[in-house]
Amino acid sequence: MTQSTGLGAQAGTAQIGVTGLAVMGRNLARNLARHGYTVAVHNRSVARTRSLVAQAGDEGVFVPCESLAQFVASLERPRKVVVMVKAGAPTDAVIDELTPLLEEGDIVVDAGNAHYPDTVRREAALRELGLRFVGAGVSGGEEGALHGPSIMPGGTCEAYEVLGPILEDIAAKVDGVPCCAYVGPDGAGHFVKMVHNGIEYADMQLIGEAYDLLRQGLGASAGEIGEVFARWNTGDLESFLIEITADVLSHVDAETGAAFVDVVADQAEQKGTGRWTVHSGLDLGVPITAIAEATFARALSGATAGRQAARAALPAHAPAWQVADRDAFVEDVRQALYASKVVAYSQGFDQIAAASAEHGWGIDRGAMARIWRGGCIIRARFLDRITQAYERDTDLPLLLADPYFTDAVASGLAAWRRVVAAAATHGVPTPAFSSALAYYDAVRAPRLPAALIQAQRDYFGAHTYHRTDKDGAYHTDWSGDRTESNA
Ligand code: 6PG
Image 1 (cartoon, protein in one colour):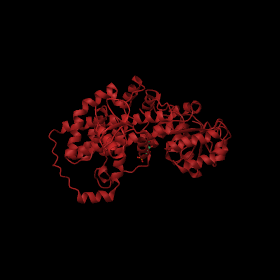
Image 2 (cartoon, protein in one colour):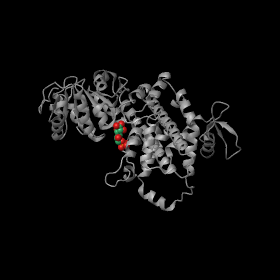
Image 3 (cartoon, protein in one colour):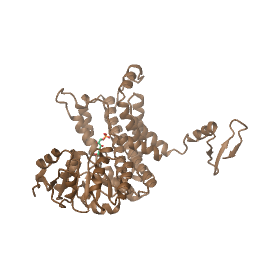
């Protein structure tokens, strides 16, 4: 293994560079070096650069640089610079410092969790300077960054021709296929990463609700429920999040000897990607109800003053919960969890399709499901099924309408209804389970109460309505003789 070169940069020797050596940046640099790339590394505080070389210098060839100028000078042309700093202003600051040092054709990769409109802006700004900007979603946390993340690069096809082989090298592999593929122009990559995070929120909320139902319905211990999740992880629900849930629920707090989950404060935080997803769903008019409920559930959990007042004032008026057949109830919850999960993913992929159409990104949803099979936080066996669904029909209007998923959800429908009804009866909050079921029933309904809403809107606001029996828009003279006129 080639030793690192120590401090000081050799001009034009590094094939790629990483600036920003916090955990994600550090591990991404190590991953690149382990794959044989000569990696220039830079951090605002030199100490971090030095500690990386000291601790991981034997993993490959690093070119440690004490300044951005040295860092840029150490890179071969066209330069490939990976920026791994906090999203927002810190990323803009690094880009502003970098661009005067770069030359036409050089590539800047933002591998942070940037908000996709920022990526669209940055890509256009750097294109004006003859530079290429790639917003790349990177999923999998620090372990993924080191051992193989799922990577969702945007930007131009030309940039991907240069950068793609390197990113595919370091990405996770499933059946030998890299969990990295070109997503689409400008902000497409960060948009898909954002939706990944929205689905992640829904997945985590659904798992939390399943856990709560088993805890309250069975009076089971965290450890016993951890064993249930471990069993579920051998079937259709097999996924990273189910796997870690089994692990977390089985973990005992060293300090108290209590179940670890029972000593964790029940206020869920969020860095913001889930909120962005919900904002986008509202703007696009895509009912990502499970993702929205999961995001709001985090906000509700953090509303401590309101929760305290509610606990004191609001009665449950719910009967004690005595589950007669425990095994049957566990199986019902498993089926309800899978059905709700399918709805959440269906909504997320609909959102990707809507954004792709709006922005002209041409995103291949099958390819996105394929690169989410490994490396990322929502990696799961059933993403193979989603990949296959979009291979059967790339323009699938609704993932739920794919024969496999239609059957999978239909077979769990009775259980799903029983679980949501039992939760409501016994006062256990299941916003994601319930909204996913409500979405399922609404999207398949032959007639919706939206007809009454249209009539109401025309009544008080003369907002007009369409009819089922003829084309055109109409208004009724509600305050007069109630004749109907063409609008
Ligand atoms: C990933 C994760 C990651 C996420 C953090 C914090 O794909 O590796 O989604 O990007 O941002 O885990 O997420 P929240 O604070 O929004 O829960």
